[in-house]
Amino acid sequence: MLRLEGKSAIITGAGRGIGKAIAQKFLQEGARLLICDIVPDRIAAAAEELSQWGEVYGMAGDVSDGAFCEALVKQAAEYFGEIDVLVNNAGIVAIEPFLEHSESAWDRVMAVNLKGTFLLGQQVARVLVAQGKGGAIINMGSTNGHVAERESAAYNASKAGVILLTKTMAAELAPYNIRVNCVSPGFIITDLTQQSGAGDTFVREYPNKIPIGRCGNPHEVANLFAFLASDEASFIIGESIIIDGGQLSWTIDKWSGIGGSA
Image (cartoon, rainbow, N blue to C red; front, side):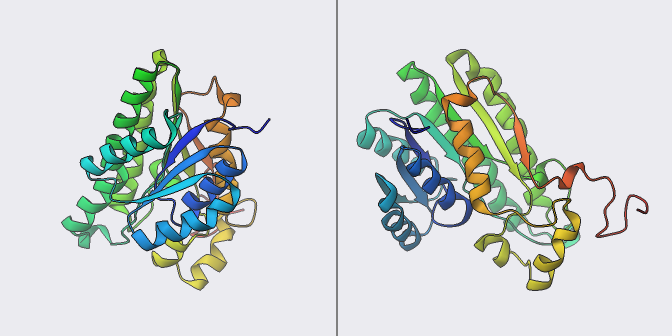
């Protein structure tokens, strides 16, 4: 039996990168999906491509808009009858030095990464409680929510917020058998990381910071999401699971020289 056979899921930010990889893995494990992205053409193309692996529908919209979140959940219920899993993956990053960080960039990053996770998480949780059979919500965190990185104030703060929001949701929803967890990836090579200012030299040299000696790929993260969405993870609740090739466990930073000498 497939790991997610018979389950229906909503996955946000699934037009590309990690979100798209999660959608592919879920479909391969037997799930039915409603995926969304803020760019209409991108989500339409993703849904068409992903359809080779199973039943998938696309919907364009902004997760920081409460009305869209409500419409997305309603549409999923119409497609599938019930909802079993939510993956709150949609996210953006603004690379700006703290002294020059704009209010508009701060507000937008917080709106998508943190507010969007809250709004859609609340909408889906209400449905799961009403259905009465439990379910799973998996939020997208980041290693940036555990340790700071320069020139990423809004992103760091938003992901730290997602991690504690996850724990709060888990504490309140566990009595309903709704498992809420968070995945915190390290440096994963995606379109977004490439466009966020990570140039070729940066990407080539970054593995020096990672014990395993390479950056991650979206499908490795997708595997963890599929596990957490499945019944195999039935006793995992309120966790922020780091998937970073061991980077945060490495006390000597060979990249910057901080932490002593080898």
